[in-house]
Image (cartoon, rainbow, N blue to C red; front, side):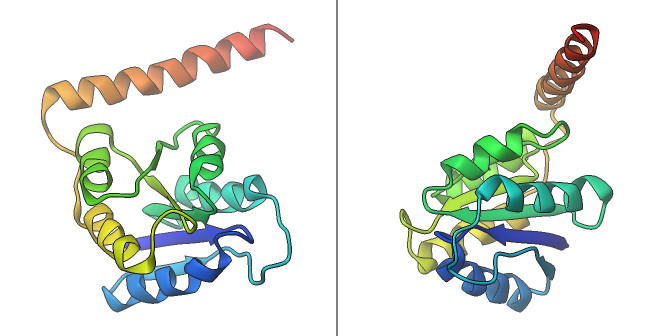
Length: 156
């Protein structure tokens, strides 16, 4: 799997171990920064990672910030991205299986690297269910994106 990874300055200490772990599992990983603890705004990194997913450069993405909350908010602002905050394995795999999550967000201040590795494994090993109920619900999410995009364009 091709995975885009990024993090802000708060997530920086955990990002390198995340990248290395994903590579050790056999995934192709692209690191979209940041590359130091110098302050950087998480929406800037989120835009790079979400662009990689939408362009097909990556199949899925991982964002690491302090809590993961800001990263999830930023990711979900982008049509076509379904971001989830996940600090446990159940949410990580069920988010993909039920909601077709393509971007997982984790908080370096919230969980340690051992738990993060388990969460990442659950995320990358999960597949979106073929259950028609889950498919219908995700289709409704996509329709919501289109509806609000049309309304925004019409309001100019």
